[in-house]
Image 1 (cartoon, rainbow, N blue to C red):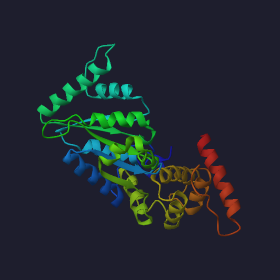
Image 2 (image 1 turned 90 degrees about the vertical axis):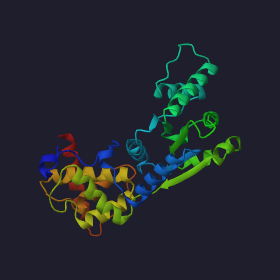
Image 3 (image 1 turned 135 degrees about the horizontal axis):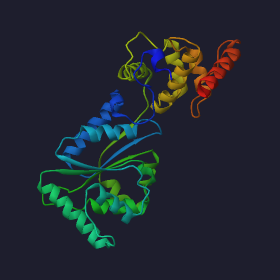
Image 4 (image 1 turned 30 degrees about the vertical axis):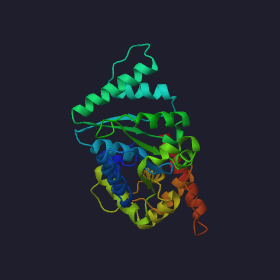
Length: 296
């Protein structure tokens, strides 16, 4: 689409969590450090929370990719499961061979045997659950019981929960207060700051192959921050549309007008007001340009 026009190898602002685009802002680096330190302790639960679009899934994948060979990881992206189904998913992630009609006792016994086997080989097992705010309370309790599996020296399984802030409210329920007490490390992933945003844009453009001068004007960056609130997913969506608009007009730089039009076309982004009367015509023209580029 616009990649050749701007000298890019690929589109820089996709919303698929690609670890090559992981941006080490102070927030994300602190969160990653927290995960790595916590994983080394091997105790209890780890909890990472953040609003929608702040990069929890990307952080999770970066964390898993950073772990050394002494770790075995299991990743479940959709944990809205009953306890038995979740344990079957865990068994599958750990390559546990099960009979078709395995009962609950044999299921837990097989998982335990596999965890003991890995521990004997000097490997630690981490279970990462994305979208953890969706886990039913009865399944959370089952997870707590799984962490009871241990040798004389250490736990056989460590669990990392990645979820939206609703997860904190779910963990306040009396029925699972024992689980909440086992959360030994936690971190809340916030949005990008205004200063971070400039570096974030430059980082993604560089990874995508951009070698030119500033592609987003300074006023465009200010408006992009205001429109997105620093939420990386919204930044990516608005920036992508703004690049499409600049391409459609044959421009080599994204202006604040492009950001205004892109934000107006994006659900969740703040609608930007233009400071002078000619804005309506410019935004309307830019919006028409975006529709034309999308149609192409």
